[in-house]
Length: 145
Image (cartoon, rainbow, N blue to C red):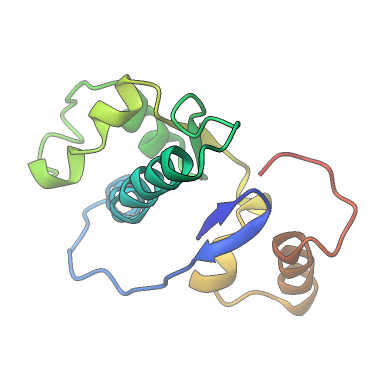
């Protein structure tokens, strides 16, 4: 789920074909797939900004990705192989360069506030409606996510 400001612009839910040996690996692969959508979108926004001469600078603002798995957040932010992560295929690590350059920021978010769960999990009605309302901007919740 990718939002520009508070507006959803790209959303996708896809069954992973990879057999993950841990939830951290599955979340890290999902994070990588999200980056594959985000990085070209960021480049497109930079080009539009240059052509239309917008005053706000996309290039100086880091995009923030919210991840509810602390292991995946740590692996994304600290480019270090551990015994639990050394088996993850190299192509899934491509976005670390963008994190290192501060173009993309990966931050932890509580599972209760993870908006992408709308697309990936069966939720009870109250939780579904609460996340939907936050996603669509229908509630007065001012927290950043």
